[in-house]
Image 1: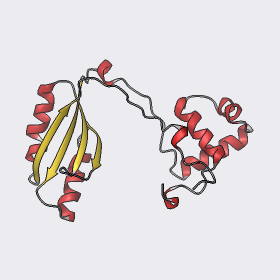
Image 2: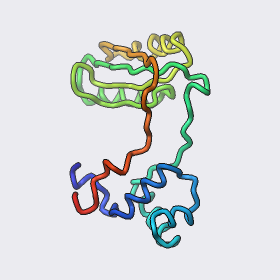
Image 3: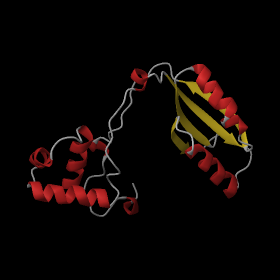
Image 4: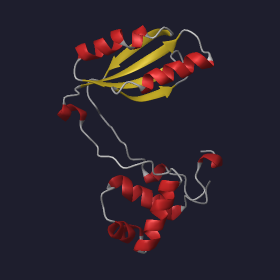
Length: 168
């Protein structure tokens, strides 16, 4: 990882805080401080600094999509006809309007973007594809990959892969 991408206020203690908060962000500051061996006030200051620096971007509840009726997860690889700045910006703007698109990545290779889309059914995904994605004038090709079953779905960034403080 490039040193310039690591926030300057992230040391070993902050990495421990991040690891613990990713495991349970609902714990009290007192409990967090005990787990990372800090005083509650020092722990609170470090958490606030991580939030203000944008290292901690928010707190969320993990929801099982299938239990709320979103049974189909589809990875859609999208290729654009051309690669101008205006077309790219227009595509990104369009993607941002669609709630069923949970992730969008610009990629290398044969396709330009990879979308992770949740839908309640194959028919609903087909409507999304026909009524939205294929209607965008600059989309040349979409290749859809339906997920058969989820093997691993992790939102926590494991502490084991954080660059260690001092090794940046």
